[in-house]
Length: 491
Image (cartoon, rainbow, N blue to C red; front, side, top):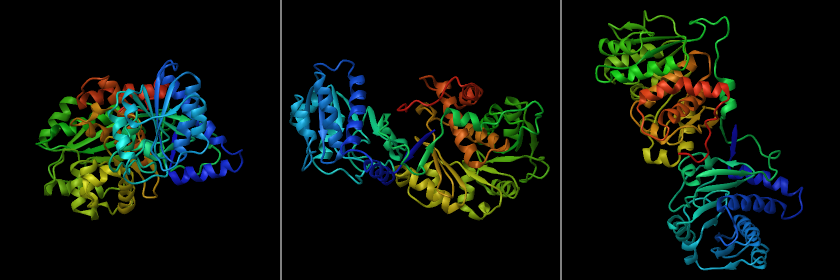
């Protein structure tokens, strides 16, 4: 499990720890870890060109002391001094080790560029000359390593307003920062390397959590010796229409592949024919009217993929949401409840799975604002609507009304194709039917779905049906311990 913290949480922990240590100890620990990562990236250090981008704060000090260590190993280290002041002891240490002060033009000749412009306390757009230096680093051929957080990225939220350093690797000190796990900050951070400087005992409860391999393995339901199809969870799926028959096929397929004991599909003639042809295992009810009466008992429902938004779809949604079991609402179901919020007034749990555009319709926020501050908006939506919200996108986020939040670390950019969200609905719905809470079903479902996407793509394009097919392999990898699904920095 990865736990991540806001800048304020980290600074509080650092103050507590520094009060117990000799002055400068934390900076030296940070610099040692930073220099070690840089040395690994360089391969051999002697004779390599390293340029430090040095701001006024402690990140600049970390960079200077790391540069000192690299210079002692024979690297040609130059420091571009951007701040109005420079760390009092760090610069003399670098110069004594053979480093020098250089102009910004040296950035283009560097094998490695170390970004120590601003630290975790910075917010808002970079000012000059920081913005210009960030853009120069991004344009240079050398590899960029960010100290703690890429300059221009808000450590607490992942927001990036204006220019920001785009790092190949971010070396973060003591604990993960929330902004390194949440886009757009995660995209700028690249691969994240954590350096232990002793903060572990001093950090509070985390701001966000990213489940790992072992966490998901513990949460995923497994059938026992006395299991039968009813005890393993029966999922109802109300999805598909004559225009979108495939959505029903994909949602049912995701649910079956994710271990539901039975899937009861309720739909009209055209999607029914397609579901029956693809999934003879599904128990099918042809709806002659928009009601789930007569479908049979289920432990959870998936509502919405490809359903349509006409009056008939609205009536069917109302019937599903009048039930007393958890309901996952996706796609057209989200459009329906955005127009009729009263449908969400129910005592049983609700899990919404919107992308940014759908969340905009639900909350009235602008899509661009949501994508710029994903964590803020998913938390606000969960609190305002009183439901669990899974926000899909480049970073999948899950929030509870209480403010708890998780971020998913699996996935692949190849998943950005039509129908993969329908598969996710089926996977998470199956986990709901098997007894997981909305929060756990969303987190485990997105983890398995993301890992299935990686397995299905293997570096090449995929179709949504490929993801459904790969779900058992993803679950097998998680439960057998053969793959973690966590690849920091892979987008």
